[in-house]
Image (cartoon, rainbow, N blue to C red; front, side):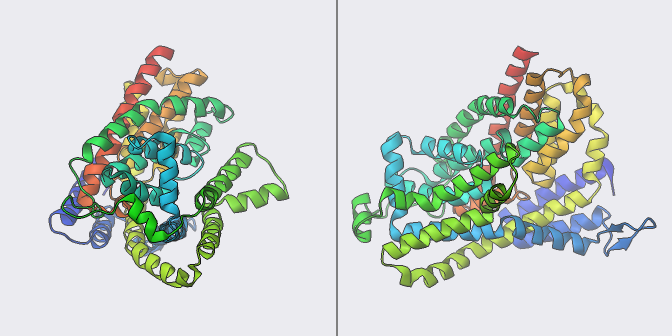
Length: 463
């Protein structure tokens, strides 16, 4: 099957998957894998690998499913495990509470959601949003305890800030690749500057939605109002003496610095032995491994190194379900990519080209919702739109940069079950999938609309 019927089947499949998870309480892993399998069969993906006359090979459905599952593990599996391990150690030593105290002193006790959103926005400039959420989640949880703010509000606020920088601001790979494809790769300073400007409306929208939805939805880790909740002082007494600020910050800030340095070296096209070492240390897996070493040193300083084995064991038990559901989402995205859907959308792009700045936004949003990856949506849409820039009337550097921003806005609209970030946010935020749709999915829709409104205004000014 191909063309419009395939797109309609995809929409029905997503609706069915949501119903299976939320209404019939079928486990997300089983629901996503089953929908992926059925969708792959309907889409006409061959059941087994096939060799063509020219020697190329078409992957069978089993191979596609295997590649989607393993690909997710290879890209983010170890990152989630190490990040969660760092978070567990920060909680055991009391460092998470120390970090929460530092944030409160910086922004005031009345603005924890805004603090988490802005912190996420800054961190996600050099760091992937998935990794950033895993790294900052211990601070979010500690701030919930410290301020009694809604856990859902804090989760949505953090997820918002991370996602906005992820799709708008280099050196995140998606915006860099899109800018290069659109012909503004040598003008990344303009892309970064406009990315920061175009973050304003979605940051406001994300903050407002986080505050709103926190009153409507509760997370599993939210304290019941009838429970006796420990005061911050009582929590501190349980730990005895909290670690100092530098020791508490090192497991989080060191990986961020390493990843940022690698991105800077790559942007500057630095070569040589030092550049290779920085690139190695700046890969998320190695950077978080260094952060884990910093956390282990902190654990030893607290005299709790004997608990390290149990901490690792409990962390793996907690992370396991997250990894498998996330990998299932990767399978769904891979099945969509292997079908003819993306080719069909690309070949009919000219129908939408009369929409001006809204065309790249809508196309990117369709691709994002269809296959799950913001980076894929950014790069694919940029490739489709680049030849059409003169037709759309976007010729100057600032106009083309706004097209890049519109693609980024679409690439966040929307995050749902085929997006690994959806599962990272919902699982680490202690929410079931149906609450994830009310929070993460709806929030990305709100932010995407807010972003394209701002971009449309800027496009009108600079047209």
